[in-house]
Length: 302
Image (tube, rainbow, N blue to C red; front, side, top):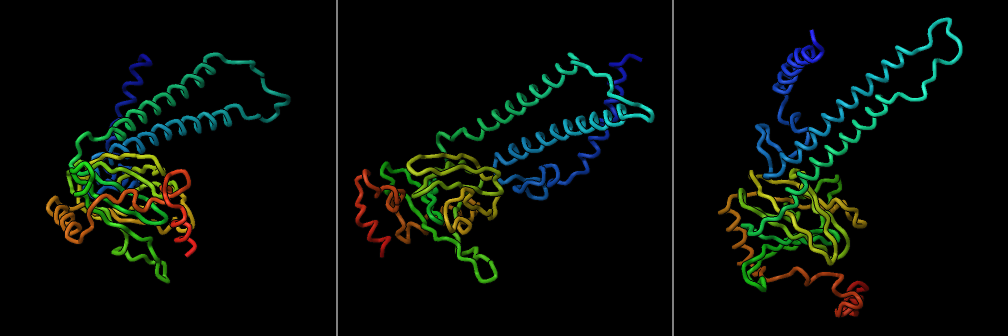
């Protein structure tokens, strides 16, 4: 039997075995034990499965490479071990061109392939919606979050907002989840979040969404996605930003469109309207920016 035909016949049982093994996996296992999925496989956003797919497939490739490497190492240890009665050094080879080409070319192809798939997915993840259903500004500050739901007016006079405070753990370490800043999003609606910072570098991370982006003072960052299922999701700052970094927590509530509209109306009824994105920006009061540094110094000293 020809070698190629033997390989084909060998691949059939391997493929069948792999199919059976994968069929027996739970949703958690199929997604590499990452969060963001329900037991029946519903993802948290329209991008979550893409991230988990890149993660899982990368690990499969790395595991195959590891098995081959370990196998070759063990084979060399056994096949070329010193036998009883042998003395001196084994035959020394200056080079083996086929092997050297193999271990140069294969890693190059692997690195190139991993880079290509990563670049492809990152391009999709970083593509912003041109006309999102919902536009929100998430503003990081030491050590909490402000959320502004932007309006349609040019001066954002019809925007509404909430301002949060940092988490204060109880004596046993528990955090009152109801007191955390909460970002409300409508399910199955395109969302674009403008990421801003009032002071230092922060990082906006919704754990179940499997993505995070940094927030730089004086620089705008954007993130576009579509929430695909209702629920409450934990968020936190993922960039060490000072003494109470660990208390910089927030929640994301994905609700129906009607609930979202009711929430926005409640903020408007409470008088929380207008554009606040720079009103409390610490860096806008630094020397050279035209702000009143005396007021800031006096406030900090007081």
